[in-house]
Amino acid sequence: QVQVVESGGGLVQTGGSLRVSCAASGSIVSANAMGWHRQAPGKQRELVADITRGGSTNYADSVTGRFTISRDNAKNTVYLQMNSLKPEDTAVYYCYADVLDLRMCTRRYWGQGTQVTVSS
Image (spheres, rainbow, N blue to C red):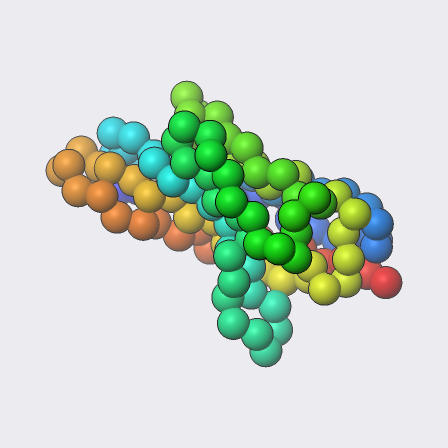
């Protein structure tokens, strides 16, 4: 079994900062790509940022320059530092991890999501 658990969401004012974290645990050989998607009310889920095990990153245009993704491979944990937050960043943020498990199978696991609300 593999679990992916997010933490760190909450309420912040426009222009503020927030960091969300996500840890993958369980029957893991290695966590490969990890990343964050988000879904705002009435909108489709969209990619926010992702990061390979080697540290290569990719960002949505809407967050480039404001958000930073990083990871700790030893802890199978990924972080998303969000600065200069805007009301349009309000969404449920979902973490994923592409995990090679003990059966030597690779699949994507998702967390339950953490709410980020930016007040105007």
